[in-house]
Length: 148
Image 1: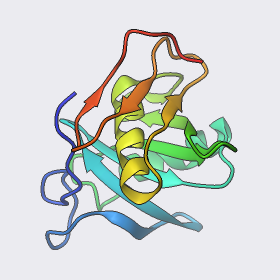
Image 2 (image 1 turned 180 degrees about the vertical axis):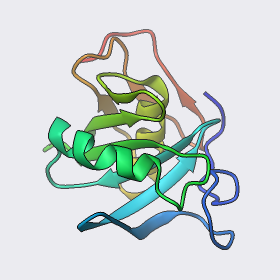
Image 3 (image 1 turned 60 degrees about the vertical axis):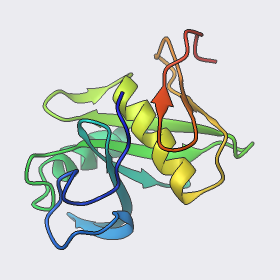
Image 4 (image 1 turned 180 degrees about the horizontal axis):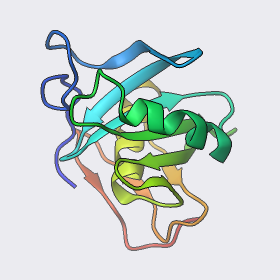
């Protein structure tokens, strides 16, 4: 994983150059508050109180191909767990569809959560073999330990 960037022209996203943090995006019948980032590939993350695989399968393909993302994007629906230090994500992978685990999705979700909320947490994905741990200054790593 590389260095994370939230700048629209680096992700890329349409519109003026800006950090893409907490923007509204209209998708079908719903408006999502999104954050977007690149760590070498584009990611669009929505922090929501409740998430499900159905939500990812319903909206993921429409966000992936949204006009705001000219090269398409990976999509993550993120829920902060009760402790506030753990997150759960549902993933729609660009070009592949719904997926049970993705290292870059875990890393991007961790970076965005750290940017818009309290830092210091682990990213959980039920079928992932590893988890992403956010580190300061935008650097991400995958430790060699199993997901909890």
